[in-house]
Length: 165
Image 1: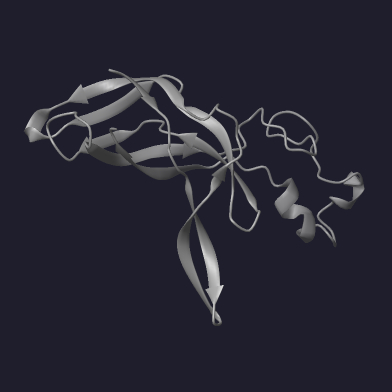
Image 2: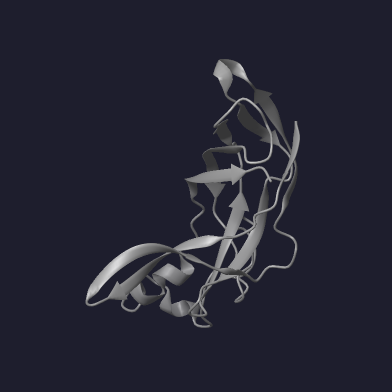
């Protein structure tokens, strides 16, 4: 099966403060990335055992770097992906209105060759976030720059829900 996924909307979980309380809520966002976020040529196996459709992603262009803007103006970069997706459907017929969802692996947005605006990357670019690398000695002052300089490549779990239109 060859599939294309083009999101119609992205929602970002945000902490919203009201009356001294903080509540987590998904808010709609505006896509800032040009038309490069659809995932195309996703290949995988489609199974109809047990009266429902299931899909297992195997290869294809299964990730795209995206940036969205929250209502307050904050921009959030992320890697839109369905890498290793295993999704199960709500019915046995793939027709308009059909829904399915499942879990997938989410690699870090900062892939090995990604360069931050300051020229830092996991495998390329500069090591430090500032022009004075002598301060990065494990001594006083390092804690405030640790988050900027700590290059971490995490793979986490994601969830997706899709509907055929």
